[in-house]
Amino acid sequence: MALDKPYLDVPGTTIFDADQSRKGYWLNQFCMSLMKAENRERFKADEDAYLAEWPMTDEQRAAVRARDLNWAMRTGGNIYFLAKLGATDGLSFQQMAGSMTGMTEHQYRDMMVGGGRSAEGNRTVGEGGNAQGPAAQSEAWKAWEHAQQQALAAQIMDEHAQNQTGAAPGAGHARVTASVYSSHVPAIGAAIDLGKTEEPYWQPLFAGFEPSKQWMKDNLPDVVFLVYNDHATSFDLGVIPTFAIGTAASYEPADEGYGPRPVPVVEGHPELASHIAQSVIQQDFDLTIVNDLKVDHGLTVPMNLMFGSPSAWPVKVIPFAVNVVQYPVPSGARCFALGQAIRRAIESYDQPLKVQIWGTGGMSHQLQGPRAGLINKEWDNRFLDRLIADPADLSKMPHIEYVREAGSEGIELVMWLIARGAMADVAGGPAPKVAHRFFHVPASNTAVGHLILEDQA
Ligand SMILES: O=C(O)c1ccc(O)c(O)c1
Image (cartoon, rainbow, N blue to C red; front, side, top):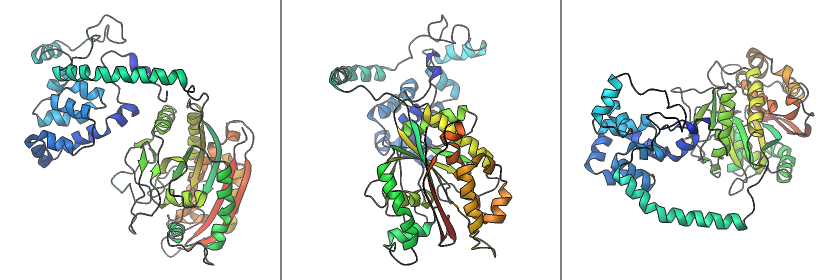
């Protein structure tokens, strides 16, 4: 059980939540494609051929062909997406809504003219209202269900047999085991990709991460919650989310202009990510939910620094992108409080997963204007000291201090406060153990800082 679903007992109602969204992703994307006239024409000319272009399930294709909206919703469709299908057929929203009620078009219109369906008796399953019955089904859906019955029965038998012999699902809940902090300079990625890590310029930097790779082998988590910023890669100026959580099953490395980095695809953890999204949003942090995301150096470079260059990443990753590109960017205090909410979310997930939270970006660097190349070693090291010992006080530092002291791009360091806020001591537990600390200048234009804090709770 990942998502809390208090809405399941509302009669005749499907709430479009993360599970539904995941299930219906391609069905809904197909519907969106009908926003273009040329696609509507192609669909109308040959429905089967057009539907075959979309990686939907056979059942979803059948539901579309039958124009059975209840069936389509059962397979993950959402009415605002399905409405593009109805619009392609020339239907109004009233005709579409009415088609799901079992009433004729006229009966439904008359009900609306008469003041609409009453909420009385329709708030909870089992009351006596007129929306309590089973969903209206097309003949096609009934036939489909009939055909599935045998397969379903066999599957239930199988599951039953497995339950008899297999282990019980893991008990317990997820926990934060450590936080990791690291700069994410693209030139570090290029040095890895081009085999330059032993060159005199790069060797001292990579040497500083050798203990980290060993530590990671000894402390491998199941999931990394990876806080980073997108560098005008997946998010352009069209949409700028302040906090965006990736809920996809996988994330391809982005092409940032040099071609995609030759690193493995990043596997996500959609169930935990959706749970965290729900929990954190219910704690009043308004996250943007992202199902389609390519990840840039901000995410992949720290992965290499901590895991080396394996053929597949040994952990699942939940990407969490923070806007630090266009002002206003979130305050340190907001980031610190968000980290606390993320810890609560992780701890309330009912699977025994070990989760690390990483903060990336920084340290001091300025990539623009006559002040480009600014480095402030003393300030950076003081930042590391304060991050370890008094993050609550550090979180009060205003943006202007980051800019003046650590350069315009040094503002990325606010993201480290998200990871730090998720540690046990902030929630009243013991102080973390400093497993590793490293600082090096320069990597390209940047001072590289790195910390590993082990949770002692
Ligand atoms: O130092 C650099 O070259 C550099 C470039 C881009 C970044 O996002 C960054 O963090 C550092």
